[in-house]
Amino acid sequence: GYKASKEETEALYKETKAGLDSYSKDLQELRTSAQGSLKEIGELKAHNQELEVNLSQLESEKIRLEAQRGQDRDEFDRERKCLEEEHAMLTENHATELQNLENEAKGYKASKEVTEAMCKEMKAELESNREDLQELRKSAKGSLKEMGELKAR
Image 1 (cartoon, rainbow, N blue to C red):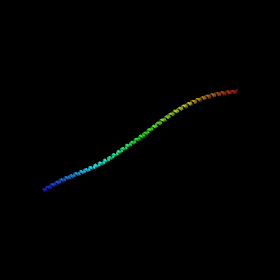
Image 2: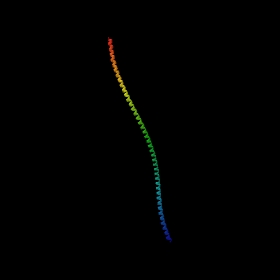
Image 3: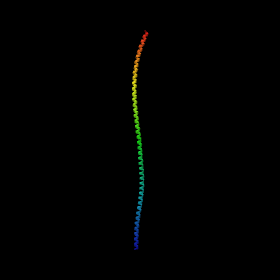
Image 4: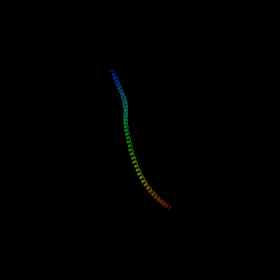
C-alpha cells in the first residue's frame, strides 16, 4: 500500500511538476509578450507625443502664416491705396497742365491774331505814308520847278 501510494504520489508529483513547469513556461512567455507589448505601447505613446508636438508646431505655423498673410494683405491694400491716390493726383495734375497749355495756346493764337492785325494796320499806314511821301515829292518837284522858273524870270 505504502509503495503504491509512494509511486502514485511520485507520479502525481511529476505530473504536477510538469504542469507547473508548463504553466511557469507559459507564464514566462506571457510576461515576455506583455513586456514586448508594454515596450510597443511605450514606443507608440512616444511616437504619438511626437506627432502631437508636430501637430502643435504646425498649428502655430498655420496661425503665424495666417497672421503674416493678413499683414501682407494690409500692406498690399495700403500700397494699392497710395498708388491709386498718386494716380488720381497725377491725372488731376496732367488735366490741369493740359488745360493750362490749351489756355496758353488760345492766348498765343489770340496774340498772333492781334499781332497780325496790327501788322496789317501798320502795312496799310506805311503804304499810306509812301503814297503821301510820293505826292509830297511830286509836289516838291513841282514847287522846285516853279521856283526855278521864277528865278529864271
